[in-house]
Image (cartoon, rainbow, N blue to C red; front, top):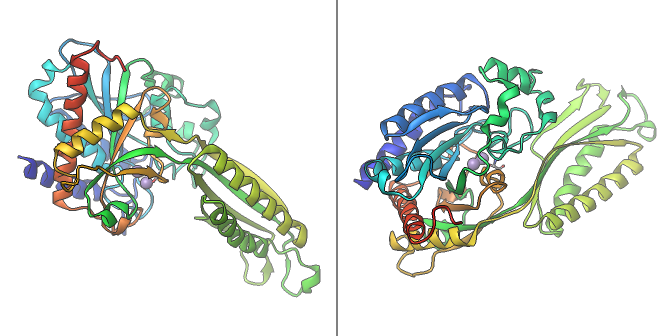
Length: 420
Ligand code: HGY
Ligand code: MN
Ligand code: MN
């Protein structure tokens, strides 16, 4: 019964929401005790759905149903169980649990499928603990970078130490790679935007995912007594404040999305002119070229601000992801499935949406064609406790995901396995 599956999914979202490092909101970061607890619970649900369950060498959780023969290439379906601070309860979580719900339906006939089906719960899509993002899915894509081991969290714990404390062996992270074993990847995710709600439709097909960069920008000035005359000051905070406004104006003028989410000021005394101010920059655009053109224009403006104020600028890149196009055949399969599940409002036209939000599919695209389905979320709100979906939309999202698997199975059955 779909309604039962949908209600069970929402109940499970509520259960996972209670697994948090914070008493006042949802916070679950990579390689934390909460990561382990949430994955343990999801592993039970995967096993109940009939899957063989394991943790991979990067701390991702993987469940597998064999197809008509053991060891066939797999259709990978998943999303992430980590969260930002004060998160909503559906970002990532809904996609993992929808995949588990579909597996529960497929288990009885998985032996007839022309491919294996796997569910993955990625451990680090948000990247909020170590600064760079998509660590779990990068490992699955065989794209782990040695320089990441030295990344530290806000307590100074390195990624290497966190790995070891979690019971993982850094030397074996390469074993998480699934290159050559996955023929396609599907992800169902809340839209994190208002377009489906504006259209009055529950689901949409994702056409592509924005190019992204993340970095920290530190303005260096001179920490001095607040009695210092204005014309002798080199106030790092004022430079950074001008920069924040300039970043927004420049990015908007070039059609890019820029966000300054964090600023740290030192020495932070009420009667001392700030010597340093460090801000985070998250920059996205539809293409790599538009992203980089916006970055160049932003850096030109910041250089001018520093020149005017006698400051210097230090840049530290923490993340760079190319724009990803979703596979046309998977888009068509999802569109067919969404249309046949009655989610197109009878209009016969399933909306195609571009994703400014980043997703694990960006990393997995390095080893397999990817397809994504967006689910309407109220007000487009996300990365906030007010994140909400409806039971009816969850029902149709689970149905559409199941139908997408069926569309792929019939396409595969009529051609050689994993001929994608
Ligand atoms: O940042 C993003 O777009 C995603 O939620 N990690
Ligand atoms: Mn997400
Ligand atoms: Mn997110």
